[in-house]
Length: 349
Image (cartoon, rainbow, N blue to C red):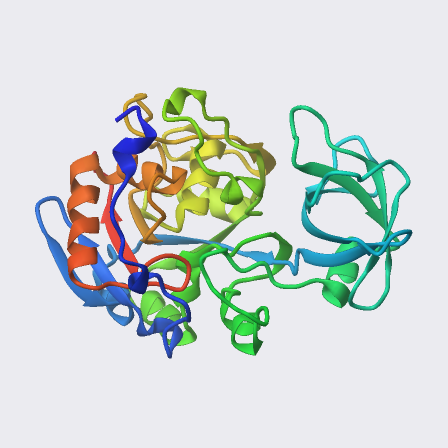
């Protein structure tokens, strides 16, 4: 399983969820056990968790990162996708730009919404050939709230752009810290009632922050997985979460972003470093990766040949995950960001 093509599967287009379920907790839940799978509902999740578990969620908030602009001099359209603060450029932000050609230092762009100014301060480099660095007036998050658009994934079709439904349902109940360019989608299913049931089970909710970044939009281009380089993402682990992990209680990660955060911050089995960090961790089968923190995983269904599918395969076992996905396709589960969920136990637990 060292090739990208090993993680391909056929998915009928009609199984790609274009809208969320009517209720947040109305999704289906595929429970993947060691030798079987079971069709359940997400509202049943609390009863399926280990008693006394530590349930860790990602509290990042999706920012309206897509900004439509025009060149001030010529009127040519340029779409910017704000990704993260630019290293070494005070007040600068790294953006994907389309089209990139013709953007130069000092070029002024004007937003289509609100007519606000954006200045190009560093064009692309050879290493990041589709990136540009820009600067805006004032706070970037406030700027994006005024002129930006929610960055829905490309497979969710919205002819007129994101709607009111998306503005509410593409944020999790836990969204607090702005910085993500995509939602940690496993968290989209949680409701206050589900959280109450989890607490009644004796489980404790904990948070980490991982700002989903450019890697979400970077497909694996080389069939040799050893050639793929993950883009870094920023994370933070609170002291309270580190203490709960160290308690020895079962750890349930809500989403692959939580897995990457906890396993990146791990300094020993059941021990994670407190505070901020960055991760380029590429978890996949066949490289001997050892999960030191996470016991159980709640996650959505991921794109074929994606690094997220590879992570899940490393966690639960390649054959188990392949069989589970085949079962989900045959059972017409809904896939990807607005789709259904899975509950898996680590293959070594």
